[in-house]
Amino acid sequence: MKDKTRQMSRRDVLRAGTAAAVLGSGSAGHGMDDATPAQREVRLEFLLPKEIVLAREACPTVFQPLGTIEWHGVHNVVGVDSLKAHALCLRAAQRGGGVVSPTLYGGVGGVNQPHTFVMDPEADVFSRLLRPWLEQLCREMARDGFRAIIMLTGHYGAAQQIVVRETAVRMSRALGIPVLGTPEYLLAIDVNYTGDHAGWGETSLMMHLHPGTVDLSLLGEPPHKGVGGRDPREACAKDGKLLTETIVSRLATLARNMPTWDDKKLDGFVEAEAALVARQISAPRGKGNIWTAWRNIGSAMREYGKLLSAERFEEIKACAAKL
Ligand SMILES: [Zn+2]
Image (cartoon, rainbow, N blue to C red):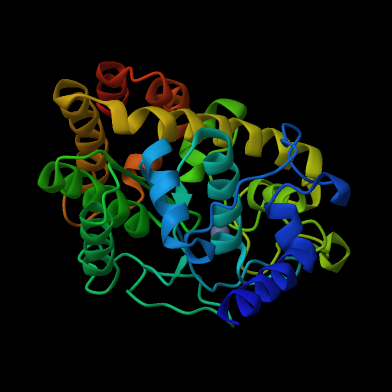
């Protein structure tokens, strides 16, 4: 009886268009290009204990998508950050291995617009809610036998990025396993995405990952309320596909390889990530603009995604020093 309920609910989920899209259903016409005939279920909350054990034996990596509820212009749904992070993690896990923990909604900051839940203040690098929650999630994932953790944040105010990366570095050291904490855009700077808010990049990603959720016709002339970065009227699914492909291929490589890293490689990774977040934390010298270390991120960190997936950590350290 229990099994029947479970199968019913899983089928119900599969019937929903967006679920079919994230699972890479070819028939929906917007699944992954590399879709295999039967996509593996990677959503942790839908796995049986024996399926988790099998998935973990094959690749002991767990993804933790992070996002929030936040205004993303009149043309986007308010779950953009969470929905894109989750969809990217699902694709990466299906391709590279691992499972995907349910998205954590809520983080540091958010724009001063309606329908925005702010759990820690915008520039609060001393986060009292997100940081301990992430720490405990990492500890529980390690306790459950996962040997690598990828926290992908689709929400990226400066303090959110700092808290996620700094926590990942500290948990890597404390748990002795690689924990990566990064916004997705950092993996795609070399394809000209330096992060925006409901602009060209995020909107293009949504048009590819969750077709039907974006309505560009609602946009008038700029300035667009609560939107930052390149004009979202230039967004298109094709660009979203390129960004997705770039981000997912790097995440998949990391998911596959991170659990195999020896102590030396782990140390190299941690030092590079620590150098990056140290620059981000200290660049404002305690009083200046929290975005100080982002001024030249497009050039200084352009190769980050490539270098990280190729495990060229010394070079990442050198890039971070230029921020
Ligand atoms: Zn966003």
